[in-house]
Length: 437
Image (tube, rainbow, N blue to C red):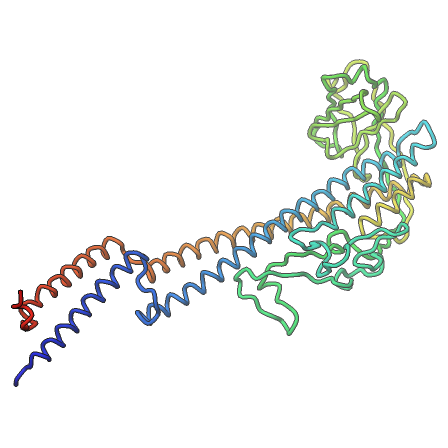
């Protein structure tokens, strides 16, 4: 078989171009640090890389969603804790309104006005906007969730006393985000709540709705009155008392009385500070009363429990509390309680104080629920962080070169290319031009 010069030349040039292309491709990989720049260079690897990139984008979306959800839940928890704090203040006001001794007729009117302000504070907390969402309005993002009009409370435009089921109110559902839990639909329009994370809440469920029928009852309120207690005897350091709640172990209660503020400020601390209320009778005496009217308190019999110069008298007051239909919604309950204080119906005010105490337990459950959901969001954020780490590792394996290995390969290809050029002297026939000088 005869091999012509043209065939040899054609093969040589083809090999030279191939070696040059390999060297050039290696240089591009070193510069870009990627295994390929076009899918045609490695179709199988490119397909795997595209699937991996899609997974990374999805995880990034889920992470952003969870970041938004975490902010919403943190704000929601803070708002509901604010409501809980308002309820504590409200109960103190109601106990003062029901059991306190007033020197001027306008005192109860002042307390009633303060209670009205507490209702307005709760409305402001429940109309909170986070990430452009009215988070306590359900799926209502256009108007305020809660509103007070003429002494009535409305949720999403409907009187809170109308429905006992929070889901019956307009826009009573929830908005959801996809957190990579495999979000599915129960029907054409309803998201399965177990497959996504809610980022809005039904405010009627948190603060209650509908009416509650309360039977009349008789209750005993144990009151400890501290006489001769005034600015002189309660100057710093604070006076400590040992008090028994329901006949239990004696516990410490500290009372500080600051006359520099108007009205005078009473501060309590110690183990029983959250279980009792200290009421300034404004006649040189204070009354210590349990927050819950079903509890009883008594001074400890130990001599050191009563500071010198202070006389303690105990009084058990029997009260006939009225019954009737009362709102379950905390804001409406607050407004009605203010009217009771304003009207001077002490027994009814005492009943409202008990209802507020019970409502505080319901709000605490809401705080616990939001806290549990926040922990679940943190768990998913950690899960997605781990997923992202794995996907980025996979991306590095699929798309990026080992720079050291590629530099060695590039050097080898450069040597091959140079050797191919040197082969031209013996491969390409000389022409007459090679001999011309």
